[in-house]
Length: 455
Image (cartoon, rainbow, N blue to C red; front, side):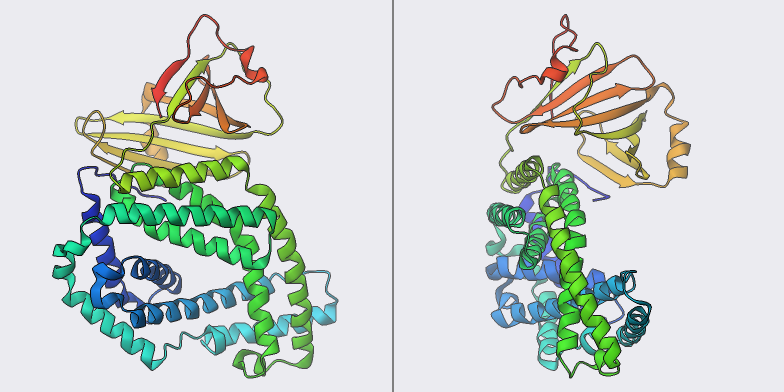
């Protein structure tokens, strides 16, 4: 998530009401065929989740017929998305195909790409008359009931209801992730993706209420990036097989026999690659990632329910020297600095993981002490360099090494511009002292006590 605003003074019921209205107002864009397909799909997925979750506050807008109309449109857009993914996979066809089969596949791909761009067959967003009529009626009702929705007693207590739904969605997502690790089958990939979208839609009101939302969105984005290669192969194979097996699909009607044969061979390649991608996903999603995601969902749900989340404590240990780390660690190089003004305080940082690209961020905070409003965004490199000139001595450069030890993650900060090495660990509620790993314990500054700070 690139941007996050926190305003604890705003009642969560008000934030939830506003999001309800935003989803309904988004139907204006959904029915506009010139709108971006990906944005429409995200809008409709969120709207579908909210219509199912908040039928009573929505009144007539939450009727079964309206919910079904939105679900039908989601299914159509997902077909289009899967078809687009299939074309992208086809255009990177395996090189071990024979030249003749590869030429046939290239011709088939070209024909399918032309069909997609012309919005034919499964690529078309052909909203049937009944669905379009229902969506237009829902849009009109949403406008008419806007004032009623804001004043409705049915909206009171939306925060606790939302917290309950988010807890439930989180548990379902955890169960699906466990299943994906034990049984990485194609249908499980789709179930995990559906659960991920539900959690993201339900967490949306927390954007202006829960400071823990940014961490949750980072975990969900991490999950989505790991899942996407597997899901793309699963969906691509399924949509291509449906097209090859169904004679009345217009995109495949013009394909030669050789083209269809090459497509069938490619579908088999997709299936084999999907198995490998599923196994890779299962091995990548570690216990610590599961625990981290579960804790972050619980934190956001607690914020929505107006319950303070359990406080975590960070322990900081000065080290005499850089320890020799276990083999399994990750490293991120961080440059960060602070620019303080009378009313606005800026924090800028750049991060680069291993050999990856460097990313740049800026956070603005208003006020002193705990800020009422804090906004963080990604920025271009040239702006970061301009701001860095104003940092001066308030800037630091460090390498951060992360090592997982059981349920805890240790961070070793090696400062590059001063003689300082620190070890940090975030302790869950109820834990006062962490067990010290042998590779770390002998490097502690014995004469200096650990520093305790809130997370």
